[in-house]
Image (tube, rainbow over all chains, first blue to last red; front, side, top):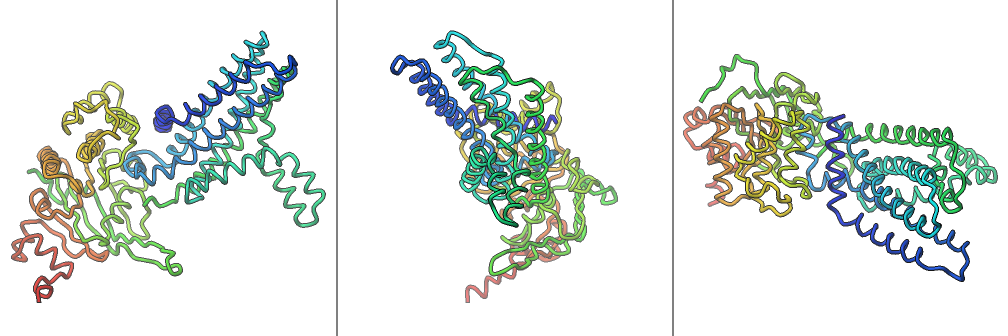
Length: 258
Length: 259
């Protein structure tokens, strides 16, 4: 595990020293602050829409950070040839993979924490109330979802030859699951055979990322999710991330480095 | 110079190694990169691994370092199959093209690799100081690697190869692309390692350099081992310099070209 943590630390240092995160945070902060500072038609309900827009922005930023960081890990190591001195050390490919995953995931989680804290601060200053449990649940579930997304991206980075292709495919896949995933069973009912069965199969196989989208909790200040459900959701993400990482390891362990 | 007699178990052992690649150009074809290569390197030796481009040197090194798996044969480091991670615990490797994480400083890079070798924190810092001093990078140790010149990057490469105080060093073209001063410095470090009794396995196209520092050499051509022996024995036996022998092995006839 110490080897994986060492690799994860390097990934985190890379994110800290790159400009991507700072640009995204500055943009999100600017838009959130601007939207939070105006009141349209003196209608307090409009504030909810503004919160929704800001949260959507945070979701997009998280996808940028998570997918962007994970997609370039293995291709960049190969292109810059840094993988060679690394793999000539007593470290297994599995340890490198776990380290890359942890680094990308922790980088995304840390970025999300900054975003949620900032958003919570702006909302609290407007509404004069704060629901810390809701924010914690929304952040932790968002992080859990990003663990699955990062694992998908790492797998894609070994299967697809270019970073751009992987970025596009993973983004399309993630957005597809988020927007269409929950409706696949209804589509299956309307489709003929064997397509219907295939779509049904897909419905049960894909990770349902939409389960982690609890933005309404923050937008409408709804009561917190029961902790049992919250824990099951985290475990669900953990299982999918583990399965995807196992698949990635199976690809990586026999891959010739040259 | 202290060379352990050949009876001692070899530090590096290549036994009937065969490496094949499948290329997808014009259909799927199998290319043999290395065939039936057997050699041993003993403790304290400086071993030159020579051959023209495409001779199979890099393929052999890739197997040695666990980057690729052999098609057939066995490769052991310190008596352990190279497929085992532990085989690399006492190994230092300097790649031909020195690319390291450019967003790290030399100190951070060395700390990272030292952690992977499991060097205890107190000793880690001491070792980092030692290798940075050895490669003369004290003044730039806190600078990002992306600001380094090529020569400095090569020295960082050497520092990372030495961070675990290895018993075996694998150097792939260690002086490639360096200016004369850089070459001299790297050569000096290799000489120093040799004097310390380290085992060095290195590939180079600089035959004069190989002749100066190596005890034994192997010349590969088209994936096959053509020459193996002590540098002085080969010179005596073939009545020529290492460079002339190398050219002869690869089939270069200066007279034919001149005619």
